Image 1 (cartoon, helix red, strand yellow):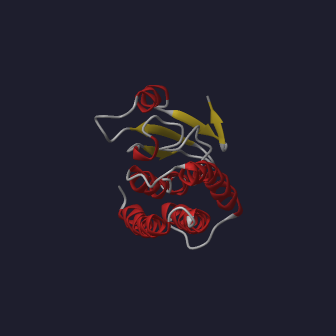
Image 2 (image 1 turned 90 degrees about the vertical axis):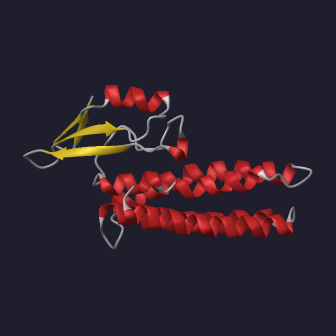
Image 3 (image 1 turned 180 degrees about the vertical axis):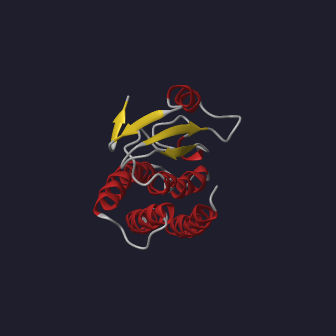
Amino acid sequence: MPSSLAWLLERLTRLVRAATDSLEQSYPQGVAEWQQEISRQLARYHAASIMAGAGVDTLTQPMTVAVTEDLATQLKFLAKFGVEIQDAQQWQAGWNSRAELYAKSIKTPFARGATKMLPLPAMPAQGTGCYSNCGCAWEVSELEGDGNADAYWRRSKDDSCGICIQRERDWSPVRIRDGVLQL
């Protein structure tokens, strides 16, 4: 894992943990405030993650669109989780670990930045069975000509999910020519 991503993950995990610990103390009346805080931190760290992956200090328009889409997906999950917490009769210890999984969602925007926003079919942790525990990455070989590359889905774990194993078979390589994915 790149050190910049590891640093962001560690920091966001601490923030999510602190917010969730606070929620546990104020449960159940603090759920809405907890959701707002987690949403705010996810927005900040999704943006920081894509910039870190790309090695830039500002978001481009395509990056902003990608972050907005990735964040919207996470916020839908967060809203459902908030309802589940609100509707429960008592605090459940497993919620702490589940809340921390939201921090790992920044792997997807980091990968988008690291692959220079190439039109790849999916990003690590996106649509996989291992979800945010995905250890996969794209290996990109840039080719001559603007917008030309071959990209390879690479697994880094022996216990990859079936989707990641299939992606490695099917997407090694995928071809991008003139900025268009060739399937």
